[in-house]
Amino acid sequence: MTSTPRGRFMERLSSGEILLFDGAMGTMLYDKGIFLNRCFDEINLTGPELVSGIHREYLKAGADVLTTNTFGATAPRLAKYGFEGSLPQINRQGVALARQAIRDAGREGQAFVAGSIGPLGLRLEPLGALSREEAKGFFRQQAEALLAEPVDLFILETFVDLEELHQACLAVRECSGLPVVASLTIKNDGNSIYGSEPHAYTALVDGWGVEVIGLNCSNGPRVMLEAAEKMVRATDKPICIQPNAGVPSNVNGRNFYLCTPKYMAEYARRFIQTGVHILGGCCGTTPEHIREMRRMIQSVVPHKVLRGKIEVSENTIEVTPIPMEEKSDWGRKLKTGQFVTSVELLPPRGPDMSRLIRCARELRDRRIDAVNVPDGPRASSRMSALATSVMLRNTTNTDVILHYTCRDKNLLGIQSDLIGAYALGIRNLLLITGDPPSMGGYPDATAVFDVDSIGLCNIVQLLNRGYDLGKNFMGQPLGFCYGVGVNPCAVNLDYEIRHFWWKIDAGAEYAISQTVFDADSLFRFLDRIGDFPKIPLIAGIWPLASYRNAEFMKYEVPGVCVPDSVMARMEKCATREEAQEEGVCLARELLDKLRGVVSGVQVAAPFGNIQLALRVLGIE
Image (cartoon, rainbow, N blue to C red):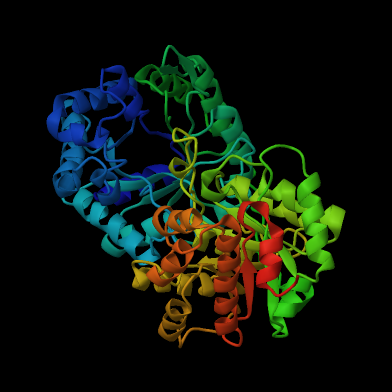
């Protein structure tokens, strides 16, 4: 037998032996009194005997491979607890504790140490701000620390994002030739979190040159068996399956996993018969589960399984995206260089749409090009912007621009919303991150923020090419005309410009500025982005209704800059009527300065008064 750990591990796999990983380190630490708010990886340093004792329990139960207690020992995850400076020690100690447990059990040369690397807890481009190179650097830093002891193989586990898993594989390959187990987590339908089917993600990971392809966490044995049956037909490489011990039930604040050891063992038999080479367990899997799985492995004589490898081709269906001018009247006018006008209409606080419908019809009759529908402005509780937009479009035949935020939904919810919106006839989007819930009247409300507006642009760009988040072809491309917000008066203008460039790079077709009260600030912004690819810029204009309204905009609306000269003019107004007249005058003066510079204007209707907006546009 080959003397190197890599050779021993791969030779035992190729001989047909079924190898058994250990179970859930986190579950065992929790059961032994480690609170969930602690950094489990740091226990390697402060509670080494606790960790090594758990390793010994799994070895005694019959595990062939120990997984190091380093799942979250990357710099970004350790930084959340203030331990990023201890990354080398935590990882080295994690390996040393597993290695010592093997020596204590007299199983040197028989059992293996797998260096565990988990996701970073950060979103990668194009759905997040972390670049692929940065991600790979974080993974390589941990891999090098794990190699210092060293490990016998690597297990990259519980990955959701295939691209993040790819970067982890590349990082390990750059510094080591040891075997790599690349393991995803999946949904209840067996697909990846972003919708890739088992044969598709298996074939993709196979192409990265890893030694083993796996699944772990999230689901119990049944779901993973169904996925494994498809995986073994998509690759000749060994498959590793490590399910949870079922779905946890919460009892008095504690999670209990209900799959019995005998149930897990029965599924171990089914996995082996399917053609799986490596077994183990994830959350809720104890040494007793592993013991029963070992007994089942010993009682089963693996037989040849007709794998019948299927050919999997990449999704390379070429589609022609719908041209901007064909997506909507709004898109056509922007594409042909017309000066466009839109008025903002806030969704109602209740279910009554009658007033809003009357306003939209009047705006349509006055030849306003579109109405803008904000999504929970200033984190207020109103009818959904999507429902409002669909009702306005269907009842008034008005071109509607739906403001869509990522604040309240995860990635799958966003995709579902957008496909549904398109099916309901919505064609124009303004993609924005959204105000934090703490700004509104519900300070205890929570946000999701799976992605920001840049990630939203990339999602819509993908949908417009005919693919969902799992890179599955949908049958036809969507045809959204999508724009983004931009703030010419941002305090950190360099940051704002950099993000604006990323939005354009993600396919944004137009931009609407934050409310502007000073033309010079917009001109300075345009000078700064002079070399950018040109997309239509629509200026946000707000006719002030009173001095109090001006104070609110100046001091309480983030990102808005109201010049002192504007404040002085509003302060001189003695009556409400005078204030409204002055507000309209200021907005008209601004509009006159911006004509010929911007591609259009979005005019607010303060307090729902569309007459103020119409007067700004010269429509009495």
